[in-house]
Length: 364
Image 1 (spheres, rainbow, N blue to C red):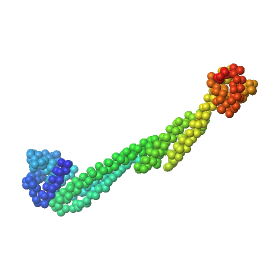
Image 2: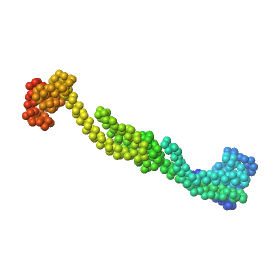
Image 3: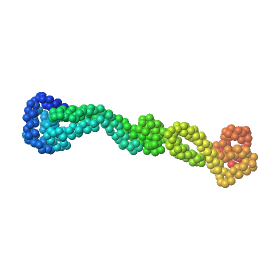
Image 4: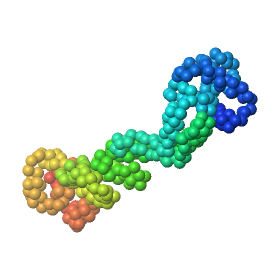
Protein backbone atom coordinates (compact mmCIF):
# COMPACT_ATOMS: atom_id res chain seq x y z
CA UNK A 1 0.00 0.00 0.00
CA UNK A 2 2.85 2.39 0.85
CA UNK A 3 4.45 1.72 -2.52
CA UNK A 4 1.16 2.41 -4.31
CA UNK A 5 0.65 5.67 -2.43
CA UNK A 6 4.19 6.71 -3.36
CA UNK A 7 3.53 5.93 -7.03
CA UNK A 8 0.26 7.89 -6.97
CA UNK A 9 2.07 10.90 -5.47
CA UNK A 10 4.92 10.70 -7.99
CA UNK A 11 2.50 10.44 -10.94
CA UNK A 12 0.58 13.49 -9.66
CA UNK A 13 3.82 15.45 -9.25
CA UNK A 14 4.98 14.36 -12.73
CA UNK A 15 1.72 15.52 -14.31
CA UNK A 16 2.04 18.91 -12.60
CA UNK A 17 5.61 19.28 -13.83
CA UNK A 18 4.70 18.31 -17.40
CA UNK A 19 1.84 20.83 -17.38
CA UNK A 20 4.22 23.57 -16.21
CA UNK A 21 3.07 23.60 -12.61
CA UNK A 22 5.26 23.27 -9.52
CA UNK A 23 4.45 20.43 -7.10
CA UNK A 24 4.41 21.43 -3.45
CA UNK A 25 7.96 21.56 -2.10
CA UNK A 26 9.59 20.56 -5.41
CA UNK A 27 10.56 23.94 -6.88
CA UNK A 28 14.11 22.71 -7.50
CA UNK A 29 13.11 19.69 -9.63
CA UNK A 30 14.01 21.35 -12.95
CA UNK A 31 17.53 22.19 -11.81
CA UNK A 32 18.06 18.67 -10.41
CA UNK A 33 16.84 17.06 -13.64
CA UNK A 34 19.12 19.28 -15.76
CA UNK A 35 22.12 18.47 -13.55
CA UNK A 36 21.52 14.75 -13.79
CA UNK A 37 20.98 14.76 -17.54
CA UNK A 38 24.21 16.69 -18.04
CA UNK A 39 26.05 14.18 -15.83
CA UNK A 40 24.63 11.24 -17.77
CA UNK A 41 25.23 12.75 -21.17
CA UNK A 42 24.07 10.86 -24.23
CA UNK A 43 25.28 7.45 -23.05
CA UNK A 44 23.10 4.62 -21.79
CA UNK A 45 23.34 4.12 -18.03
CA UNK A 46 22.59 1.03 -15.91
CA UNK A 47 20.09 1.42 -13.08
CA UNK A 48 22.73 0.66 -10.44
CA UNK A 49 25.04 3.32 -11.85
CA UNK A 50 22.18 5.81 -12.18
CA UNK A 51 21.22 5.30 -8.54
CA UNK A 52 24.86 5.75 -7.52
CA UNK A 53 25.07 9.01 -9.50
CA UNK A 54 21.94 10.35 -7.81
CA UNK A 55 23.14 9.40 -4.34
CA UNK A 56 26.60 10.86 -4.96
CA UNK A 57 25.19 14.15 -6.30
CA UNK A 58 22.43 14.40 -3.70
CA UNK A 59 23.57 12.51 -0.58
CA UNK A 60 20.40 13.33 1.41
CA UNK A 61 16.73 12.92 0.53
CA UNK A 62 15.75 15.45 -2.09
CA UNK A 63 12.26 16.26 -0.85
CA UNK A 64 10.83 14.78 2.31
CA UNK A 65 10.54 11.01 1.61
CA UNK A 66 11.75 11.16 -2.00
CA UNK A 67 14.75 8.83 -2.41
CA UNK A 68 17.11 8.13 -5.29
CA UNK A 69 14.85 5.49 -6.88
CA UNK A 70 11.88 7.86 -6.55
CA UNK A 71 13.73 10.58 -8.46
CA UNK A 72 14.53 8.07 -11.23
CA UNK A 73 10.83 7.10 -11.42
CA UNK A 74 9.83 10.80 -11.54
CA UNK A 75 12.25 11.41 -14.42
CA UNK A 76 10.70 8.43 -16.26
CA UNK A 77 7.18 9.83 -15.70
CA UNK A 78 8.20 13.31 -16.90
CA UNK A 79 9.78 11.80 -20.00
CA UNK A 80 13.34 12.79 -19.16
CA UNK A 81 14.49 9.14 -19.03
CA UNK A 82 13.27 6.08 -20.87
CA UNK A 83 13.79 2.61 -19.32
CA UNK A 84 15.05 -0.23 -21.55
CA UNK A 85 15.05 -3.16 -19.16
CA UNK A 86 17.66 -2.18 -16.54
CA UNK A 87 19.19 0.45 -18.82
CA UNK A 88 18.08 4.07 -19.02
CA UNK A 89 18.46 6.49 -21.95
CA UNK A 90 17.56 10.13 -22.41
CA UNK A 91 14.28 10.93 -24.19
CA UNK A 92 14.16 10.08 -27.87
CA UNK A 93 11.24 9.31 -30.14
CA UNK A 94 12.26 5.76 -31.08
CA UNK A 95 12.79 4.46 -27.55
CA UNK A 96 9.80 6.45 -26.33
CA UNK A 97 7.50 4.68 -28.80
CA UNK A 98 8.90 1.28 -27.77
CA UNK A 99 8.37 2.03 -24.07
CA UNK A 100 4.75 3.09 -24.62
CA UNK A 101 4.15 -0.09 -26.63
CA UNK A 102 5.60 -2.14 -23.74
CA UNK A 103 3.32 -0.41 -21.24
CA UNK A 104 0.31 -1.01 -23.49
CA UNK A 105 1.20 -4.72 -23.85
CA UNK A 106 1.56 -5.01 -20.07
CA UNK A 107 -1.84 -3.34 -19.64
CA UNK A 108 -3.49 -5.72 -22.12
CA UNK A 109 -2.16 -8.71 -20.14
CA UNK A 110 -4.48 -7.70 -17.31
CA UNK A 111 -7.54 -7.99 -19.56
CA UNK A 112 -7.80 -11.69 -18.75
CA UNK A 113 -6.86 -13.11 -15.35
CA UNK A 114 -6.45 -16.88 -15.35
CA UNK A 115 -5.48 -19.42 -12.72
CA UNK A 116 -5.46 -23.21 -12.91
CA UNK A 117 -4.96 -26.49 -11.08
CA UNK A 118 -4.01 -29.94 -12.38
CA UNK A 119 -6.26 -32.95 -11.93
CA UNK A 120 -5.55 -36.62 -12.54
CA UNK A 121 -8.90 -37.16 -14.26
CA UNK A 122 -9.61 -33.74 -15.79
CA UNK A 123 -6.10 -32.58 -16.66
CA UNK A 124 -5.54 -28.83 -16.33
CA UNK A 125 -8.57 -26.95 -15.02
CA UNK A 126 -8.55 -23.25 -15.85
CA UNK A 127 -10.82 -20.50 -14.64
CA UNK A 128 -10.56 -16.92 -15.82
CA UNK A 129 -12.04 -13.48 -15.39
CA UNK A 130 -12.12 -10.75 -18.02
CA UNK A 131 -11.17 -7.22 -16.95
CA UNK A 132 -12.08 -4.19 -19.00
CA UNK A 133 -8.88 -2.24 -19.61
CA UNK A 134 -8.98 1.04 -21.46
CA UNK A 135 -7.08 1.35 -24.73
CA UNK A 136 -4.98 4.46 -24.93
CA UNK A 137 -3.20 6.26 -27.76
CA UNK A 138 0.54 5.76 -27.91
CA UNK A 139 1.31 8.42 -30.50
CA UNK A 140 2.96 11.67 -29.40
CA UNK A 141 4.43 14.75 -31.04
CA UNK A 142 6.86 15.88 -28.32
CA UNK A 143 8.29 14.97 -24.94
CA UNK A 144 5.45 16.62 -23.01
CA UNK A 145 2.79 14.63 -24.83
CA UNK A 146 4.91 11.50 -24.48
CA UNK A 147 5.14 12.08 -20.72
CA UNK A 148 1.36 12.44 -20.43
CA UNK A 149 0.96 9.14 -22.30
CA UNK A 150 3.40 7.50 -19.83
CA UNK A 151 1.49 8.91 -16.87
CA UNK A 152 -1.87 7.77 -18.27
CA UNK A 153 -0.60 4.27 -18.91
CA UNK A 154 1.00 3.93 -15.47
CA UNK A 155 -2.23 5.06 -13.83
CA UNK A 156 -4.16 2.58 -15.96
CA UNK A 157 -1.72 -0.14 -14.94
CA UNK A 158 -2.20 0.67 -11.26
CA UNK A 159 -5.97 0.45 -11.67
CA UNK A 160 -5.68 -2.77 -13.67
CA UNK A 161 -3.40 -4.35 -11.04
CA UNK A 162 -5.86 -3.46 -8.28
CA UNK A 163 -8.79 -4.95 -10.17
CA UNK A 164 -6.71 -7.96 -11.23
CA UNK A 165 -5.74 -8.64 -7.61
CA UNK A 166 -9.41 -8.51 -6.59
CA UNK A 167 -10.37 -10.78 -9.49
CA UNK A 168 -7.57 -13.20 -8.61
CA UNK A 169 -8.78 -13.41 -5.01
CA UNK A 170 -12.28 -14.20 -6.26
CA UNK A 171 -10.90 -16.81 -8.67
CA UNK A 172 -8.80 -18.39 -5.92
CA UNK A 173 -11.90 -18.70 -3.76
CA UNK A 174 -13.73 -20.30 -6.69
CA UNK A 175 -10.75 -22.53 -7.35
CA UNK A 176 -10.70 -23.60 -3.71
CA UNK A 177 -14.24 -24.91 -4.12
CA UNK A 178 -13.30 -26.61 -7.40
CA UNK A 179 -10.25 -28.17 -5.76
CA UNK A 180 -12.49 -29.73 -3.10
CA UNK A 181 -14.86 -30.94 -5.83
CA UNK A 182 -11.96 -32.39 -7.83
CA UNK A 183 -10.67 -34.20 -4.72
CA UNK A 184 -14.11 -35.72 -4.16
CA UNK A 185 -14.41 -36.86 -7.77
CA UNK A 186 -10.85 -38.23 -7.84
CA UNK A 187 -11.63 -40.23 -4.71
CA UNK A 188 -14.68 -41.70 -6.44
CA UNK A 189 -12.63 -42.48 -9.57
CA UNK A 190 -10.07 -44.24 -7.37
CA UNK A 191 -12.75 -46.35 -5.70
CA UNK A 192 -14.78 -46.97 -8.88
CA UNK A 193 -12.56 -46.71 -11.99
CA UNK A 194 -15.56 -47.63 -14.18
CA UNK A 195 -17.17 -44.29 -13.30
CA UNK A 196 -14.24 -42.13 -14.46
CA UNK A 197 -15.67 -41.58 -17.95
CA UNK A 198 -18.96 -40.34 -16.49
CA UNK A 199 -17.38 -37.74 -14.21
CA UNK A 200 -17.67 -34.03 -14.88
CA UNK A 201 -16.65 -31.03 -12.81
CA UNK A 202 -20.17 -30.44 -11.58
CA UNK A 203 -21.72 -30.49 -8.10
CA UNK A 204 -24.74 -32.49 -9.26
CA UNK A 205 -22.49 -35.10 -10.89
CA UNK A 206 -20.43 -35.34 -7.68
CA UNK A 207 -23.60 -35.83 -5.65
CA UNK A 208 -24.83 -38.51 -8.06
CA UNK A 209 -21.54 -40.38 -8.03
CA UNK A 210 -21.20 -40.10 -4.25
CA UNK A 211 -24.62 -41.76 -3.95
CA UNK A 212 -23.51 -44.47 -6.39
CA UNK A 213 -20.34 -45.06 -4.33
CA UNK A 214 -22.48 -45.26 -1.17
CA UNK A 215 -24.80 -47.83 -2.78
CA UNK A 216 -21.83 -49.88 -3.99
CA UNK A 217 -20.54 -49.91 -0.41
CA UNK A 218 -23.89 -51.14 0.88
CA UNK A 219 -24.12 -53.81 -1.82
CA UNK A 220 -20.62 -55.05 -0.99
CA UNK A 221 -21.49 -55.09 2.70
CA UNK A 222 -24.64 -57.17 2.10
CA UNK A 223 -22.77 -59.45 -0.28
CA UNK A 224 -19.88 -59.83 2.17
CA UNK A 225 -22.27 -61.25 4.76
CA UNK A 226 -24.04 -63.45 2.18
CA UNK A 227 -20.96 -64.88 0.48
CA UNK A 228 -20.18 -67.63 3.08
CA UNK A 229 -23.86 -68.61 3.24
CA UNK A 230 -24.14 -68.85 -0.53
CA UNK A 231 -20.93 -70.88 -0.68
CA UNK A 232 -22.18 -73.37 1.91
CA UNK A 233 -25.50 -73.69 0.11
CA UNK A 234 -23.70 -73.98 -3.28
CA UNK A 235 -25.60 -70.95 -4.59
CA UNK A 236 -24.14 -69.21 -7.65
CA UNK A 237 -24.34 -65.46 -7.06
CA UNK A 238 -22.62 -63.13 -9.53
CA UNK A 239 -22.71 -59.89 -7.51
CA UNK A 240 -19.20 -58.79 -8.56
CA UNK A 241 -20.02 -59.37 -12.23
CA UNK A 242 -23.35 -57.56 -11.83
CA UNK A 243 -21.64 -54.57 -10.26
CA UNK A 244 -19.01 -54.45 -13.00
CA UNK A 245 -21.71 -54.41 -15.67
CA UNK A 246 -23.94 -51.89 -13.88
CA UNK A 247 -21.12 -49.46 -13.09
CA UNK A 248 -20.32 -49.21 -16.78
CA UNK A 249 -23.80 -47.79 -17.42
CA UNK A 250 -24.48 -44.04 -17.21
CA UNK A 251 -27.33 -44.78 -14.76
CA UNK A 252 -26.46 -47.98 -12.85
CA UNK A 253 -29.84 -48.31 -11.03
CA UNK A 254 -28.00 -49.62 -7.99
CA UNK A 255 -30.86 -48.68 -5.66
CA UNK A 256 -33.12 -51.22 -7.35
CA UNK A 257 -30.34 -53.80 -7.35
CA UNK A 258 -29.69 -53.27 -3.64
CA UNK A 259 -33.41 -53.61 -2.82
CA UNK A 260 -33.58 -56.89 -4.76
CA UNK A 261 -30.39 -58.14 -3.09
CA UNK A 262 -31.81 -57.41 0.37
CA UNK A 263 -34.96 -59.40 -0.43
CA UNK A 264 -32.81 -62.26 -1.70
CA UNK A 265 -30.63 -61.94 1.40
CA UNK A 266 -33.63 -62.44 3.70
CA UNK A 267 -34.72 -65.51 1.72
CA UNK A 268 -31.21 -66.94 1.64
CA UNK A 269 -30.81 -66.49 5.40
CA UNK A 270 -34.03 -68.40 6.01
CA UNK A 271 -32.84 -71.16 3.72
CA UNK A 272 -29.46 -71.17 5.46
CA UNK A 273 -31.07 -71.37 8.90
CA UNK A 274 -33.14 -74.34 7.75
CA UNK A 275 -30.02 -75.88 6.24
CA UNK A 276 -28.13 -75.49 9.51
CA UNK A 277 -31.09 -76.87 11.47
CA UNK A 278 -31.18 -79.96 9.28
CA UNK A 279 -27.42 -80.40 9.64
CA UNK A 280 -27.73 -80.20 13.41
CA UNK A 281 -30.51 -82.76 13.41
CA UNK A 282 -28.37 -85.00 11.25
CA UNK A 283 -25.41 -84.63 13.59
CA UNK A 284 -27.62 -85.42 16.58
CA UNK A 285 -29.06 -88.44 14.81
CA UNK A 286 -25.60 -89.80 13.96
CA UNK A 287 -24.42 -89.23 17.52
CA UNK A 288 -27.49 -91.04 18.92
CA UNK A 289 -27.00 -93.97 16.54
CA UNK A 290 -23.37 -94.31 17.58
CA UNK A 291 -24.19 -93.99 21.28
CA UNK A 292 -27.28 -96.18 21.38
CA UNK A 293 -26.81 -98.56 18.46
CA UNK A 294 -23.03 -98.57 18.17
CA UNK A 295 -23.09 -97.84 14.43
CA UNK A 296 -21.72 -95.02 12.23
CA UNK A 297 -22.72 -96.35 8.80
CA UNK A 298 -26.04 -97.47 7.37
CA UNK A 299 -27.87 -95.42 10.01
CA UNK A 300 -30.96 -94.77 7.87
CA UNK A 301 -31.46 -98.47 7.15
CA UNK A 302 -30.84 -99.41 10.78
CA UNK A 303 -33.46 -96.95 12.03
CA UNK A 304 -35.97 -98.19 9.47
CA UNK A 305 -35.43 -101.76 10.62
CA UNK A 306 -35.53 -100.83 14.31
CA UNK A 307 -38.83 -98.98 13.93
CA UNK A 308 -40.33 -102.02 12.25
CA UNK A 309 -38.97 -104.47 14.85
CA UNK A 310 -40.32 -102.44 17.78
CA UNK A 311 -43.53 -101.39 16.13
CA UNK A 312 -42.60 -97.76 16.78
CA UNK A 313 -43.68 -95.10 14.30
CA UNK A 314 -40.74 -94.23 12.09
CA UNK A 315 -41.33 -90.49 12.60
CA UNK A 316 -41.20 -90.89 16.39
CA UNK A 317 -37.93 -92.83 16.26
CA UNK A 318 -36.37 -90.19 14.01
CA UNK A 319 -37.64 -87.39 16.30
CA UNK A 320 -36.06 -89.08 19.32
CA UNK A 321 -32.79 -89.86 17.58
CA UNK A 322 -32.44 -86.38 15.99
CA UNK A 323 -32.53 -84.78 19.43
CA UNK A 324 -29.25 -86.49 20.21
CA UNK A 325 -28.18 -88.62 23.14
CA UNK A 326 -29.07 -87.22 26.58
CA UNK A 327 -31.88 -84.96 25.33
CA UNK A 328 -34.97 -84.61 27.52
CA UNK A 329 -38.02 -86.10 25.79
CA UNK A 330 -41.42 -84.53 26.47
CA UNK A 331 -44.26 -86.77 25.19
CA UNK A 332 -46.66 -83.84 24.76
CA UNK A 333 -44.08 -81.88 22.74
CA UNK A 334 -43.32 -84.89 20.54
CA UNK A 335 -47.02 -85.51 19.98
CA UNK A 336 -47.55 -81.90 18.92
CA UNK A 337 -44.51 -81.97 16.66
CA UNK A 338 -45.60 -85.18 14.96
CA UNK A 339 -49.35 -84.41 15.04
CA UNK A 340 -49.75 -87.78 16.75
CA UNK A 341 -51.90 -89.17 19.55
CA UNK A 342 -50.03 -88.66 22.88
CA UNK A 343 -50.92 -92.25 23.89
CA UNK A 344 -49.23 -93.58 20.75
CA UNK A 345 -46.14 -91.47 21.55
CA UNK A 346 -45.96 -92.73 25.13
CA UNK A 347 -46.38 -96.32 23.93
CA UNK A 348 -43.54 -95.83 21.47
CA UNK A 349 -41.27 -94.31 24.13
CA UNK A 350 -42.00 -97.26 26.43
CA UNK A 351 -41.02 -99.64 23.64
CA UNK A 352 -37.72 -97.78 23.13
CA UNK A 353 -37.10 -97.73 26.87
CA UNK A 354 -37.72 -101.50 27.07
CA UNK A 355 -34.78 -102.00 24.68
CA UNK A 356 -32.58 -99.60 26.62
CA UNK A 357 -32.51 -97.10 23.77
CA UNK A 358 -33.84 -94.32 26.02
CA UNK A 359 -34.29 -94.06 29.78
CA UNK A 360 -37.56 -93.72 31.58
CA UNK A 361 -39.08 -90.30 32.05
CA UNK A 362 -37.60 -89.84 29.28
CA UNK A 363 -34.02 -89.19 28.12
CA UNK A 364 -32.86 -89.99 24.59
